Amino acid sequence: MTASLRQKIGQLFIVGFHGTHEKDPWVLDLARQITAGDVGGVILFSYNIQDPSQLKGLTSFLKTLAPEHKLFMTVDQEGGRVQRLSPAQGFQGFPTAAALAQQPLDEVARIYRAMAHEMVSHGINLDFAPCVDVNPDSSTCPVIGGLDRSYGSTPDAVVTYAGVMIDAFHAENLLNVIKHFPGHGSAKGDSHAGFVDVTECWNEKELIPFYQLTQQKRVDMVMTAHIFNAHLDPISPATLSKATLDLLRSSGYQGIIISDDMHMGAIQDHYDVVEATLQALRAGCDMIILSNNKAAAIGVETFIPSVEALPILIDALVKEVQKGTLLESRIDEAYRRVLKLKKHF
Image 1 (tube, rainbow, N blue to C red):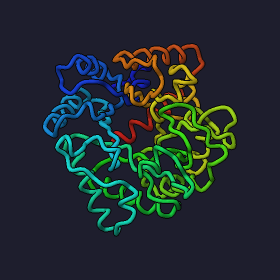
Image 2: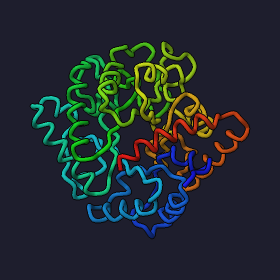
Image 3: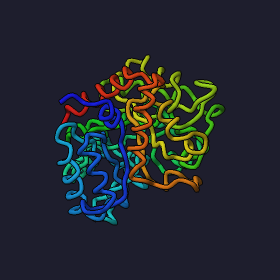
Image 4: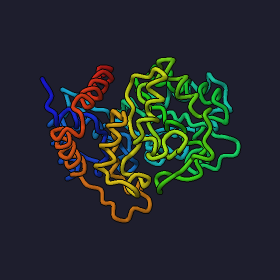
């Protein structure tokens, strides 16, 4: 089947929603969008997950709606404070990256295979992990080092332990996403809450894990950060910066670059989401996350999650292509990368 322009654009989005069962109103609306081929994937949050049986039923239902394009079924499951499949909901629960970086590699591999197996057996096929942000000794980053999400203060430690996670995931047929390019570990703020400038604290060594892991051909996607670094781009944050994303491409990486959530405060505080998405696609992002999660938009009082957020954005981007302000060749390039990875399924 030949995809329409609208379907090609839709395949570039991973969208969040509210609901837990197939009869929930938002899920019914989302189901129609998936059936039309207008959704590339969905992201699940804790409020979408009640228990193992419910999760398996929800993921199975959504996947059956997309036999042609398949569906990325995604979560943030790192361990510690960042795990959507939690013990409170009847799942195993896993340690933080910082804790596992103190353990023997064979034990880490065992733990990460168990994590991956649990996700895959409940319908998840892509995890937004590992976090490969370096945590400098002086870092006070509240959302990386502050939550023990980094494997250490050196690129070597990060590459070693993140590589174990990646290999364990692949052994269980689970796709990975390394994050947050070009490095969020030295940031002194939280990009969920607003603008974060790392110009004075970022170090080039933060690029090393991204370069090494992608050059080893072990990475399925790379997620961008919404941080601003005037040394890399004096105007735009990384997600919207062609100069920054070109660093990753020039290192040889040809896979999918996916944005961090466009509903986060760092974007919504300064940009209209349509304009930000347009800029991200032009800069080189191949996929876009729209979480519809108010917790991602800390301080953005006007933000209202909506099942119509994705259709409205697709409509706007179709018009931009028709006007010539967004090249269809850029959409086609990104769409080809998405289809290539979905062949994994």
